[in-house]
Amino acid sequence: MADNDSAPIIIKKVNKGHGGHHGGAWKVAYADFVTAMMALFIVLWVLSQNDEVIQGVAGYFQDPIGFSNNSTQIIDGPGSGTQEVTIDVERKLREMERERLAEMGQEIVNEISSNEEFVHLANQIEIEFVDEGMRIEMVESAEHVFFQIGSSNMQPESKKILRDIGSQLAKINNLIVVEGHTDARPFVSAGEDYSNYELSADRANAARRELIAGGLHSDRVYEIRGYADKMLRDEQDPFNVVNRRISIIIKFTKNER
Image 1: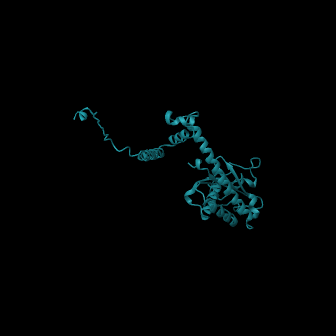
Image 2: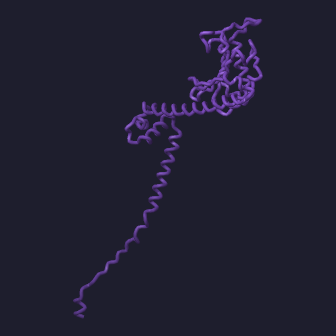
Image 3: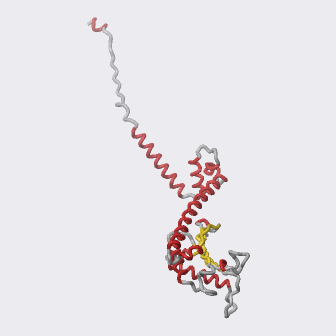
C-alpha cells in the first residue's frame, strides 16, 4: 500500500469543444447575394431619376477618382461636368441621326435616277442639311414643272415621285414639314383673296397628300408652310423659275417640338 500511496496522481483533462468550424463558403455566397441585390437597387434607383442624375452616375463610373467634373454630379449636384457630358451625348446622337438620314436621302436619289420615268427630273431633286434637319427640294425648271402654271394641280410624274419619297419617309419616325414656294410673279386670278401665299400653301398641301398616299402616316406631318416668294433661291432674279419649288424637311429628333 505504501508504494501505491507514493505514486504520482495523473489527471487527464478532456477538452469537450466543438468539432471545428463548418467552413466559410456560405459567407461568400451570402456576400455575393447582398452585393447583387445592392447593385439591382442602384440600377432601379438610377432608372427612376432624371437625365441629370443619370449622366452624373455615368460620369462617376467613367471617372471614379474624380479628376474631371463628370463625376461630381452625384455629390455636388448639377454642374458644368454634367452639361458637358449631355452635350457630348447629344452631339453623337445628332451625328448618328444625320448619317441615317443621309443614307435615306441617297436611296431616294438613286431610286429616282435609276427610274427611266423620272431620270430626266433627277437633277431637279436636291437634298441638303439645314439647322432644322434634312431638306429634300423639288425645284422646277424651264423644261419641267411639277405643277400646272398658277395652280396647285400636280403633274402625274410629280405625284409618283412624291409617293416614292413618302414610302421612304414611312420607314423613319421623324416629323415632317412641307413647304411651298413661288416666284415673285403676282398671282392673277378672278378674286382678290387668293395670292401667292395661298398658292404656295395649297401646293404644299397637295404634296402632303401625295406623301401620305405613298405610305407616310398623317400624324407625322408636323407643319405645312406657304412662303410665297419670301424665301427665294435666286434673290438676284425673283422671277427665276428655280424659285418655284416644294421643300420637304425631315426634322432632327431634337428639333421636333
